Length: 424
Image (tube, rainbow, N blue to C red; front, side):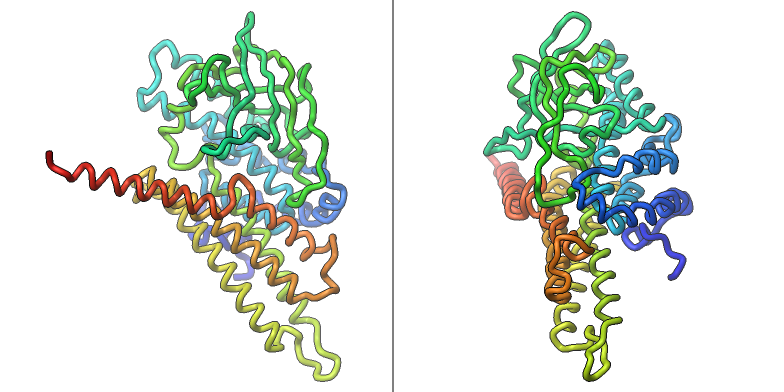
């Protein structure tokens, strides 16, 4: 349908309200598309996009209406990041990480409703959660910083940033290696570990102003991936954060995650929607160019040659594969009532993430082969897509690790079932 919203190509059963929110996203796409090439060439986030997204009312996309937001859900976010991904993947990625901050508000409130916090903990937890949500709905850009350069063999993300108690607040020290909107966001939502804790019970969260004393940016890096997302990260050296901007209740993070169907970051499947959007973008561009371009001797479309037909067929299959995995995961994480256990959803996600990103990258490689040397450049839609989508193969974890972890969950669950069935 000619009048179909871009986001509907992914979420094809939108409600009336979801279409209304998707229409707001649609309005910003022409500007994002127009500045995508320059953002990639500069390796910098276009600062004018801040007001663009804020003026469109999108900063509170998935914040409940009672806190001043648009009341969207993960379905809205996936549709939005997908649509933006077709225009400017870098901006889509940064917007995704802003929205993951909402989980730091929504999940604590769900944990309170579930009775997971003691009476004396509830006021502190609720105040922090509501502050996060109200900041977002008011147009404040939050950059969600969890990932670090420190890694462990048993975890995808190890938190070495520490929070040390001081009068009236906390001192944060550490380094965050990846988090979009570095130097762009108004606040960095930083995950840290309470000094003296070695387990997940010590994980805490802090709202860190971008210009707070002791906050510096890590050196910019010339990496593959979405170069206009300002993802070089930050360093924290004894940064003072007052109690009002901290959720430092031991065990709070673990209790939050008990209420989530998703992942550590929150709404994480929407990041793969960025990659699928980028794949759709390069697919559309390649198909149009190859169809318009003709052979000099026959006048026939280049897209009709046997070689190109094979490549286009392969690209189509890979793109549809990405859609199937993403839509299945979206269903698992949003349908009511749930149709899978948290463990099953988690295992499915570990496989889905890698499968989606691999399929999206395969689309870009197909476009590269089909387009020939004329498109083998660092700029242009094909050149950007190859680099942008390559990062999906290693972002957070590669496909191989995801499958390994999924297999571990599945076999552990099976072993537990068998053990439970043994009569003694």
